[in-house]
Image (cartoon, rainbow, N blue to C red; front, side, top):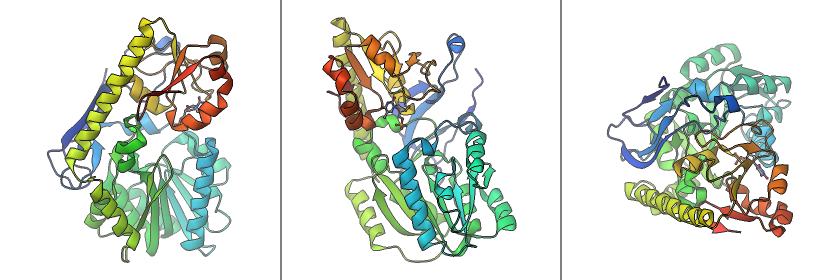
Amino acid sequence: MKADFKHKDECRICRSKGLKKILDLGTMPLANAFLKKEELNKPEPAFPLVVYFCETCSLVQLADVVDSSMMFSDYHYLTSASKPLADHFCQLGEEIARRFATNRDDLVVEIGSNDGVLLESIKDKCRVLGVDPAKNVVEIAKKRGVETICDFFGEELAEKIVKKYGHAKAMTANNVMAHVDDLHGVFKGVKKLLADDGVFVFEAHWVGNLIGDGGFDQIYHEHLCYYSLHSLKHMTELLGLKIIDATLVPIHGQSLKVYVAKHGEPSRQVADLLKKEKELRLDRIETYKAFSDKVESNKIKLLKLISGLKAEGKQIAAYGAPAKGNTLLNYFHLNGDTVSFVTDTTPLKQGLYTPGTHIPVLAPEKMNEMLPDYVILLAWNYADAILAKEKALRDKGVKFIIPVPEVRIA
Ligand code: TMP
């Protein structure tokens, strides 16, 4: 199979050589590469999933980069599909329009604008422009009336946008910075496109959450960077940009919300968060080695539980087939021999098989028909809501195994 990936030997931010390996999850297919039945016997592209730490700027990152067109040209994650997420982004849009783009003529540009939810919510207040490389989501955004360029954002595109639309009073990027391989290119583009008094506000997964209760299964090939404010400070300083404000927001566990500008002084909150990160030792490799040990012991505990249940003849299925579930299944080598089926509410996934582990994905109703003894809750981030929703199933004796961050049965 042709290797559509490259291995980098230097840090994405500070270009230091000698990145330190902190967690090796082995070789696995892309987390969203669900298979059709006829593909099951064909060779499956698989890529190393290994996490590294840069001791110079403290960026946690993948060094094996899968060809971005394989991951992002056709994207099945729609922001609007999750109501709480869509509401959150509309609120962020409101804040941007109220604080940074107060005139009808002011331009707001969103990098990774997905289906246009955020920009649609403010398009009557200012000029908006989306940028996203996935054709399918760009079409949806356009139907919503959000002008969108189908491309990867970088310096060159920023220049074109300036020529055609002028400078941006505000820019935003949400849950997309983790996907960026050429970080310098993106930040240089931001510097080019942002007005002198403009602000770039973005949200990104926080590495403190990942190594805390966030769950190692957030690690998959799409997520190239796992940020701390420390690492982002390094990045912006290299390009002469300033972090003027930063906070943690309760999205995907805890995400960083960062405000970057060309001028200005950091707020008190920036200092507070940097201090918190120091206390959590997010700038130290030992912290990540401890995280790696925790993942290993998580694996041992879950596999012990499952082999015990199998020995008792119990039937095990899984609930929810999120991308992160595929990291877990592949790393733990849980395939169709152990897990009979998985159910998922997403019609697009139903009828397909999980990448690497080849477990059939069925519609949620099947759970009621098959009544397995145990289900591994792969969509464990929704544990409270799902356990409440599935009371009837649980009353019939189906037990839920919550695999991450600590194995427990409910
Ligand atoms: P997410 O964590 O990326 O939002 O993905 C959650 C996945 O779990 C998604 O494929 C939908 C699925 N799911 C269910 O099957 N049942 C549920 O009740 C919920 C909340 C999600």
